[in-house]
Amino acid sequence: MARIVPETPVRTISGKLRKADRTTFFDLDGRTHAWQTTAYTGPWSEAQLAVQDKFKAVNALVLADMADPDKKKEWQDKADASGGRYRTARGIAFAHYWAAEEDPGL
Image 1 (cartoon, rainbow, N blue to C red):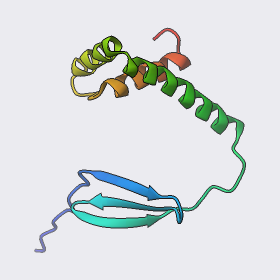
Image 2 (spheres, rainbow, N blue to C red):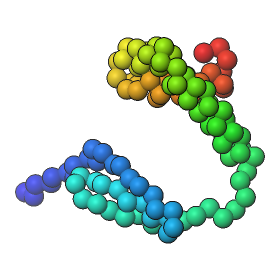
Image 3 (cartoon, one colour):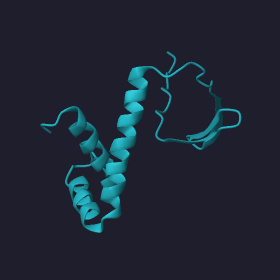
Image 4 (tube, rainbow, N blue to C red):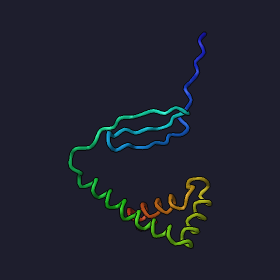
């Protein structure tokens, strides 16, 4: 009987985009790969523009909080208490502000 060995799951992927030719380089299990992407040529939809505006607004709030040492410490304490869900102060602050804009009750 043949023995089947499943492929190892992807542990980490990190990459860098070279804008000139839209090539993304990433490391996958110790090997470097290149992925050619296509540029978006059509106009942005209203929904896409709304998400872009929301991202800019939330990012501005997070950057302001990260510039204040007391606020940054508060966010880091919340991240540490999240049980591993969030590892950085910036991550938990961004998630909080992103959700709060959609649902002010949070």
